[in-house]
Length: 373
Image: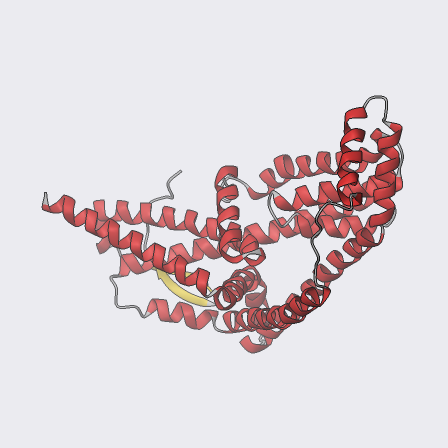
């Protein structure tokens, strides 16, 4: 009975700690989200940083190189979003006119939709219908207030990347100096090594696949006949980093782009259909084979993680969702190893084997059971 009550108390404390952690993370979004994103991006670039250090460069220089790469990637992302979005906005009236013309041409088969359109238009032309007035100065004021916040969070993100890269070795030294028993310390080191490897492999592989997908989309949109095909390829690269939501936005934008460029149901939908087919091949075949079983994630868990982190931290949370899920997966494997270690006390007496290098350090590693399948 006492053991049950003690276990219940421990579970309650863990639950309260988790709630408190995410409550603080929610309240401190502007502080914690850029730092967490900086750690994720820094983890992705740690292998590159180590290679630079092996050439004899100081850690600070390796950090500066990574920061310059981050600036370059950010510039590409901004341009990749600004060009198609601005073109999309400029062509908005033309797309609306094309949409109305298409509805008129489908009058015989889609009469009900046309009637709904007339009723919808009547709402805006009826003088007796109350209207909502939007204060333009409020929108401008909101934009002016949002700008400094974005700049501040971006600078905090860049500084976090730099210091994480420059001080990764000190982090490993600190873990090695923890006053805990050697097998537990070895499992902790293995857990961190697993997190770093899985996040770095996942992000680098996804980045390479998305870049290749962008080139294919560029060529496909050019063959279909869509103007500014390179912009659509660049936009596909960026939006493909956002699970579920990114491809949906891309598909919708291609439908509207087809409306402004072509006539007829099939030509209008063709760019979106081609994109969906290519995206399906990429996600179901290429990505699955490239990542392998070690970093393959359950689609439902990906969706839940993405929805939760978007709710918690907005767009920054969307980029953190998959690394957070990979970290949770590594934590589960580490807990399973620790459970098996507790069941096999003989592991505590094992001698440390010669070194394994993480973050440029030689560290002892205890022989542990294989990872659970």
